[in-house]
Length: 239
Figure 1 (cartoon, rainbow, N blue to C red):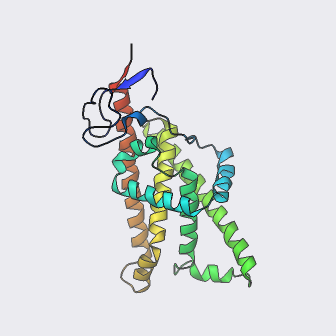
Figure 2 (spheres, rainbow, N blue to C red):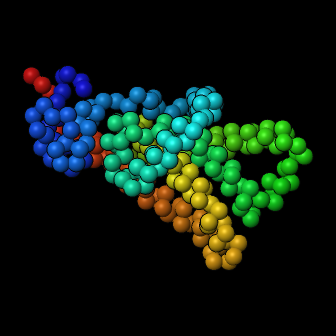
Figure 3 (tube, rainbow, N blue to C red):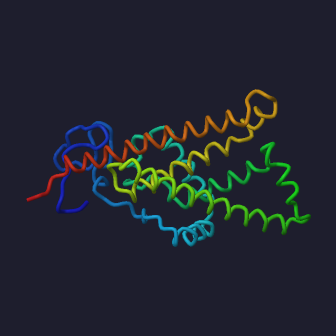
């Protein structure tokens, strides 16, 4: 922890810190991590977006998949703790999440009744050709939706004049959008089956997804805002 500062209250539950304690006595939050910056670069630039995405594609592994699943659990169950989890290093890097969400989304394309016929027409007739086509599709989808999410987050931050740092806000919104997409597409066989048997329509599922994503983005923003207010009011400079 930075030696020039100390923290007197838990940022999550507000409990007063026991002198020299590293963890909150009530909720167990790692107080040492509150003033630490996340190791990953949170700044997302358009020029660096594609190279960082390719790096994440090269690092695809079972470990990253498990980290993404763990991140989905943390965000879905405890969105108000997003800022704390980010500082504690309990969330997968954004571009890892984006790659995993892209794989899950591409999987959905082969099942969804509206995109399945198109994917069948794109069959190149051999496994190598299909693998190359799918790889290009993965990269295109990840880049397109990633760029779109970044632009939308920046616009929202500027228009609403939000009281959190733009870099953190954009990173958080793209992360939440990607993790919600990952979670929804992983279970896509279930809701696609509901569309096919007429239980729901495709637009009902899309509205539901958009509404849930909006709610989680708002809850995550509240986590960032609470963190900003907390650090401003409760972090004291050591004499």
